[in-house]
Image 1 (cartoon, rainbow over the protein chains, first blue to last red):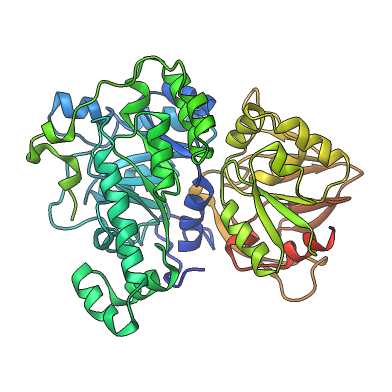
Image 2 (image 1 turned 60 degrees about the vertical axis):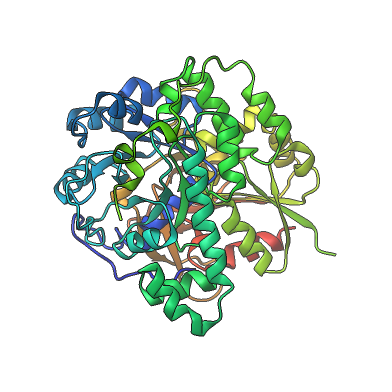
Length: 308
Length: 192
């Protein structure tokens, strides 16, 4: 059990016992071993649900289109989000801009099950993230390293996803970020108690949370991975590297046969340690999304560098 | 020697169940394949998405072996999505969604609404000795109707049924595995 369960918060709900940290983190626990898929229409949401998505992420444009079209990327149109909420029976997540607490208020009002405070959208605040504790709806936030993950948890995030580099189909940054986070957790676990004070200073994270992670040998919340996953083998790679589950963005609906690829990635995520099943899932999927090598993306256009 | 018990590990919070069982001294293993199911004397179906568990159970040939074991009297405990999987009838399911069945009950998926309506509360469970059960309901199902063969084990203050049993089958709408509650698991192990 976790030690950082803050007192019950009630903004946004008038029912007792709702919006507690346990309930917020608990939904992420139920998503583990699953695939969360980016969708931009109700029709795509139904395809994702039929293929075995454990949740869908509603957004206006998938990251590959945000990347190619440029401009400011914002929260989706409420009609679009409401249409997706109505279309499926699985949890619906939606993205708000970093620091845009009013977009988050709107998304909570629309009844989404999780808010992603996401670097894929254009940040609304280059200093502060959203204070997530007062909300009844839980938040997932991106992180490239342990200190960033712990700062988001301190602000109330109930789930972390490693960022990767969204919209590229290049899994290398996702690999780097999940390895970094897991490696830093392992290093913390190996430290003696008197070394954790300096560790907290170096991670720029609260001492109590650092102690908790060192004791648990894990984050106190679920850790998914994201950003560049495009094939069943990519998803299985993330699971073997210790992710609790996988977000797939552009990789599904920018591919040749989205329904088939989506179902294949779901299977490979469950049987991530079984090469035979991953091979079976990988057959005859048609074309994968056209990828961009992260090294070809100029640093100012890398989404993972948004958020701090 | 302890009999081996399984936790269905297609998707969901199966690790939480495995650690509760291990803490109780059980020899607990994840189950994703028929040959793994053959090794266990009892099974827990965890929380997660019932639609995903149904699809994967069918895709990997686990559905019929599971139904056969349930029919043969294997003890099975389902939490949340696991309760849905054990129910004979489901409301608000996907059009092609199938359950394993076994509990003569009708459940409604996401009966409380979306995540904003997820909550935790204390429940009286006469079957279990001791203090009330602290229960977390997360996009939880409700048992809307109970057939003659099944028995209610716990209700909310408004009378809605959230825990049931029938023979060796046990189902709860909530998640003891994430609140440090072990008595349902102890009861399940006593059925082996």
